[in-house]
Image (cartoon, rainbow, N blue to C red; front, side, top):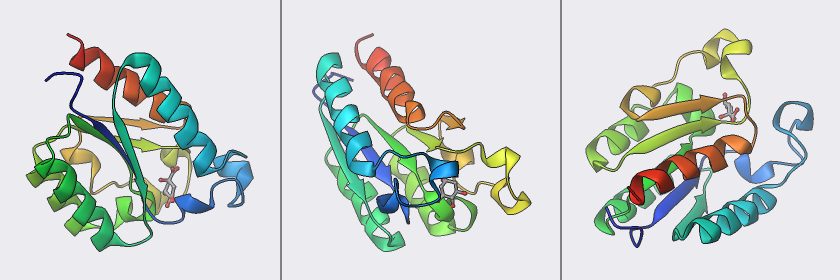
Length: 149
Ligand code: DQA
């Protein structure tokens, strides 16, 4: 797919509180900081991006449908707590036909047992956990490499 097709960055519930929320786990950077770096990295890579965060499951699903209709080339998603609960989000990802990469700031496998299971990972192309915001940028580079192939 041509580099003109955008890449989406989708963040789920509570991720709008990054920087304030449990900084020992999620770090000091705000979501605005992360999205700014993400946009700069994308610009340097010649990739068009769109960023969206919502605390609401339906809004995340609406955005996936919109980005599907708009022929996005890939989506980087951190579904937050919905990772472990949402069949609806999984269904939206699997029916979208866009490649998704799931990113978690923390290493969910080192944490509580209920975080070890992801309902969404099985319908994503790749999963990154525990690299902090770098996980989002690494996923972007992966998509950029594919787009420029
Ligand atoms: C998270 C991990 C989830 O278990 C948690 O509910 C989050 C953030 C992460 O980025 O590490 O909200 O997705």
